[in-house]
Length: 480
Image (tube, rainbow, N blue to C red):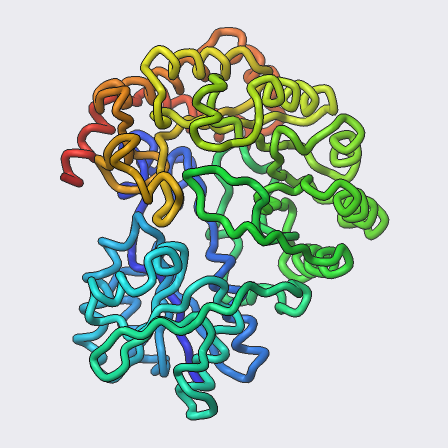
């Protein structure tokens, strides 16, 4: 069976303020500051379907127009097309699916991703062109769907499927998550060209770079997030085998560990680090860590194994606001974690949220001051973007209002304690106060070690220097 996967055509102008979305004369492919990641989830599904004997094709909506994608469908003649979408892209995806249905009336159109997994039958109600939605992890559910379309099983037996039956929308039972991650084949990297993708500026040491996942799920209970709370792990040997493949077959020179918290199980992290060193897989890499899941011994071991940057999800410098989102950490833990990362000899990167529930304008300024007080190499500031189905989204009117597209770099949410104009102003103040401090600029200048460092810093300086509150408000007005 032929199966084609894609995402609706898009560009960074839809996800970033215009100064950040503009393409640099130093890099014609990507936006000035942001990353372009390949769809690891879809590549996992492609690999699993291939293992089951099917033929797959991935067509990237960033590099292909609507007509080009529809043309590939006509050439490839798939039995079904899988379209991945997140909350932000849903409004853009619906007309794309409608035109696909008009062009190919007999084609099975299937959607998946975070948004369909959260809202389930809502997608089928809002878009008659959709035949089914695959909820949750799609690897083995996609294989089951193929079996159902081949007549080898009933549609009712496809785990977690939302589908149409005799004019009614049916939700099949969702039986759980994949516990044995080693049973999933490595992503089908043959579907992409790694040089078409890149981490954000300042987030890589060399290209091409690859994303890698050593686990799935998160132990955190952040009120804005919808991550699966069942944490599962790949074996260190399975992980090293993938890293070796990426190095030898695809020439990968840098890794981003996309685990939501790489350091959550200390003994396992040590085993991975030892195997990375012993196997010769000592590429430069980055990882995410909760502020309460690091210590000096572990951080030094990470440094020895090639880690050069640790990202800490800080969110706020005011304890009341951390508690409001059930972050489960303290301001002091954040400060201590960042200082430990620096003492271990690595770069420290932290993300902060402007416009948290109950946050006031003055408290947001305190968060910006807190970020500037830390020895951070990079910081990211974005508005609260509640995931569909997350605790905050389920009671959004209690905390504030949705005002724009659910994109991390646009204004999505305004708490009752602030105005829209204040949030827009704070997002600009945050970047300019952090990145244009004289000491920071001098330190950044003398740490440049290559022309790539110069190019990245010039792109960031140009984009952040031109940020204005009205750029954020333009997007909100367009959304309204």
